[in-house]
Length: 250
Image (tube, helix red, strand yellow):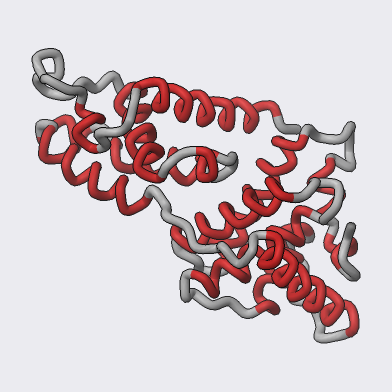
């Protein structure tokens, strides 16, 4: 189902791979969440509202079929709704114009004509639909505050040279951001995602914690006592699948 007016933006064709065979569902969601993140940045949204928008989007398509609703319209409605949830309010006109410029680079802002009002009505109706499907449960706990706390602790544990030389913090935040291309936010606890992101970062740079071999428990158990190694492995595996998907997209 495509709401009135949205088809002219070109989003539906982009999501389904108009220039080739239809994309697998996971690849469609990857593409749409990439649009969602880029649009969120252009709209001046901070990381938490963008994460909320991605979570709303993924949770919605856990409840309904991808073939039923235009994913880019749902993404636009998710952005608009996330702005309300996180008190970083957006204007629908800005959301529509950013989406239009995403699909038609260099284009001018849309005129306030009948086409614009059709698009606006579509976003508003879709927002109400998303709220009903999710039963108005649109507030989420994100890993960001946990990752910040864990990074501060890690900085105190490692020697100053290693911390300054290796971009641990930058890499960890990038991994967390990219995790929202998939559904990790729905399948795992926020604390566990934060630890797993940090674990993968340290593994990528070959960093070992001081006195880890003689410690009674692993460093990640200090952060989250109920976390088991298989959970970390599952999160890391899902993250790697996201990056693999990125390289395979046309």
